[in-house]
Image (cartoon, rainbow, N blue to C red):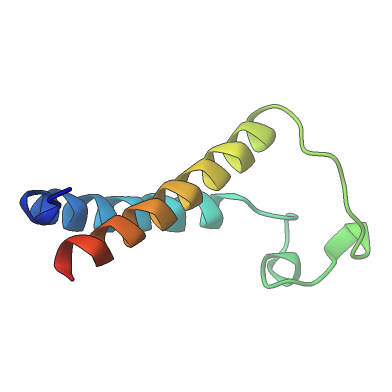
Length: 81
């Protein structure tokens, strides 16, 4: 299987996926204040809560994009040798 023809496309998709993952992760906030944004518990005192609606969809899309990024990275590594 010759992947050298896909080099430019793999590189472009790597950059696009990296930007999308970064945006999705930054949009997923844990709370309303800065302390919870930086990893503190905020009002939830560090507990877990159930994701619903748009938040659950964004979580799933982030996981799918991360998996695609991983596969794309492996293919790009094989294409560039």
